[in-house]
Amino acid sequence: RANTNWAGSCFDSVIFILVQGHIVTVACQYKLGRELF
Image (cartoon, rainbow, N blue to C red):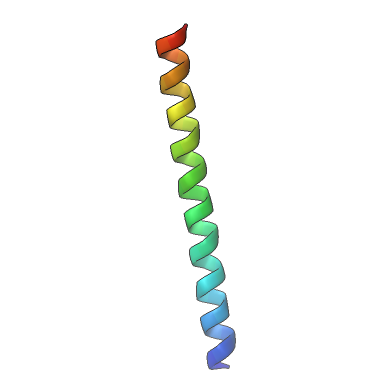
């Protein structure tokens, strides 16, 4: 059960990092797009 909880929290952390990274990527592309156009 401890291993399952650890794996679950680790998985949640990975998803959170991916979502955060996606938001940052979109924000950077938006900023770059505004500067170019």
